[in-house]
Image (cartoon, rainbow, N blue to C red; front, side, top):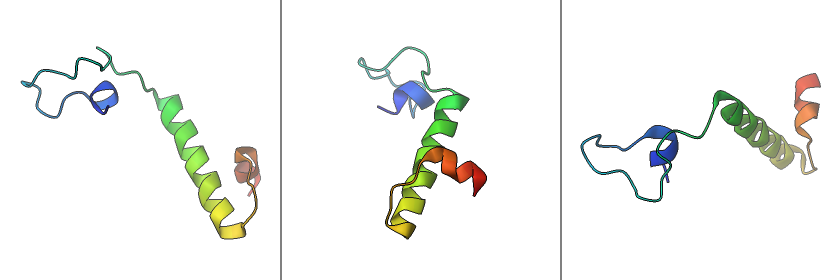
Amino acid sequence: MLDAPFGPVRPTAPADAGAATHPTATERDGALALAVALAANRSLETGRPVRTDELIAA
């Protein structure tokens, strides 16, 4: 699973046959994942749902 975004751990080892041949995650994907994680953390702190756009104003 990690071969797709990061490449094989050992470059000389054959890549996972099910992995994409090129990385598929982008910087935008990473930023979106971070926003979701921050919203989840805030939700755990407050005990209520948190929208990701609420974090920008916070």
